[in-house]
Length: 109
Length: 113
Image (cartoon, rainbow over all chains, first blue to last red; front, side, top):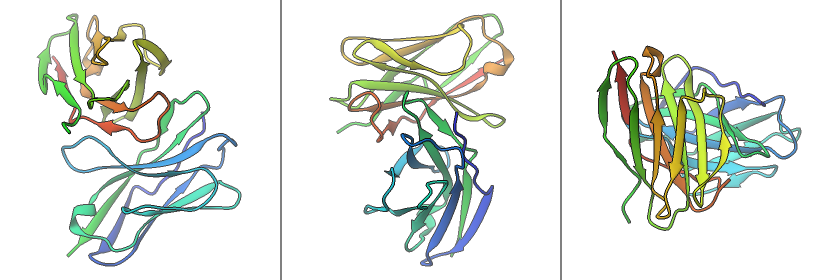
């Protein structure tokens, strides 16, 4: 199974952009890259996903490296409500998702 | 539209017992996945059901089983409980199997003593 590597934690100030990195050097050509986040005492919440091209939605942007061995989730203006654990996930051809350990994002007011 | 609901929210069992957890997906969603979350192992995929058929299974022993009903509601069962089965069990639903956008419920906190 392809695995992901993320920093254990990152910190940001409110209203500043946040770049959350994820390494997935063993990614296969058919693996989609997904990001979920989990707020305290809640189930995970879908954020964004992509295959090769950069993706944007109302929550965030996903930048995927040309060789697809890494990706970055971009929160354009962090708010206190964005404080959560962010998971970078690969979903392979058999559709079994492999979760990384996640990055705990701390947002300072 | 109501979200994913899981019952019960909290459960305490003793070793050797069995437990059944229930999940009601979002209306119209036909795929249900189950995950186990522990501090040590993080989030791990258990299995996925679509149209009453198990489509995928994670690397868990046979003590963990599940099923899906015709109304897409799902149950998972753990037999012969072990202390290590203490975890948060999360259910997620999506429109179709393999769908990338999953909606998670709040989870069932199982404690095995």
